[in-house]
Length: 310
Length: 166
Image (cartoon, rainbow over all chains, first blue to last red; front, top):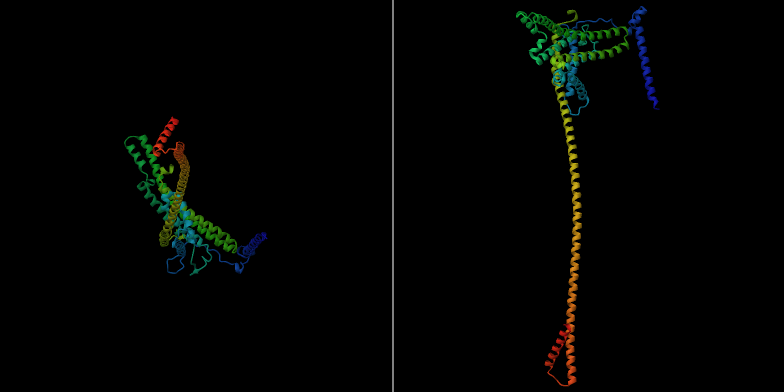
């Protein structure tokens, strides 16, 4: 009697696997891949339009500058706002339901930021880092909801993954960059700029050269030139970091969308589901990387070298 | 870059959207949630402190109770000892009183006996006098002055008694 449910479950799993495999085979043979081997067109119920990825965001409403990625990001904002609004509307000391769920994730994120940046800075960095994380994640996962890109208006999809529009990753990178520099400047004052404009040693070298101490002067001038160059490289790396932020997210998200699109074209059934799962994971990882790196750079910006070495 | 879709109005629009989201989440999400988490942490800390305090008070009360029990025990012992001592004293006193009373009774009895004896002797003496008078009267058949006679005999007897006692 006790073995029956297990057997039943096992059989069910086997049946599901069998059906899945059958559908995959049918869609493989009947779809675009099979059609290529069969030298004919795909079966009617398996025929999908060939993927035509478009890089720039499109405008579904003629005459309006509103793009489909804008609409998607507004939906993300509404979803996140709704989630937090309803979770924090009637807060109780003993949480339950939505409040419990949101509080749990917030607490995990707070602990993470506190661990990385310390309690003092973690409290300050948490809102920006966690909002970046949530925004990227919601944009990515919203793309995976059924029917997301299927509604069209004027021949243009009404919704599109906001992360796959280069303006969104760039905007996030600019926000991250500005916040890092602002916090660094706020924490260290004018000395923060020394990281980029380090002329002290060079000036000292010149002074020594003009005062006749050639040996030390040459040495310090050389080291000063190296320091100025290092400062230039440092400044450049901050800007390049912004570009790498942008293209990491943009590339991953766009590639993910294109992969799913291509898989739907090649094998319309079953196989794209696996890529959907992969995309869900990828969205989470990208959100974590973006927010985590921002947090890391923030911590580096506000921590003095003395603290770092100690 | 235009091929990638880089567009300033879209960029600005997305930036504004993100900043709005940041503000909304900060004011409607993070702040109340953070306050609630802090409040809960404070409550838990307070509860733990209260529990610790209660435990400490309980232990202290337990010690006080034990001390009180010990004191009461000592007092009880003391009372028992005192009661025993008092009982013993009372018994001793009663014994002494009884003995005193007995002694007094004996003394009284002795005095009574002495008195009875004296009275009996007096009685006997009087009877003897009377008998002697009668006998003398009969013998000498001569009526003597009775009172004079009596005093004569009394004197004689006294002399004889004094003589005997000496």
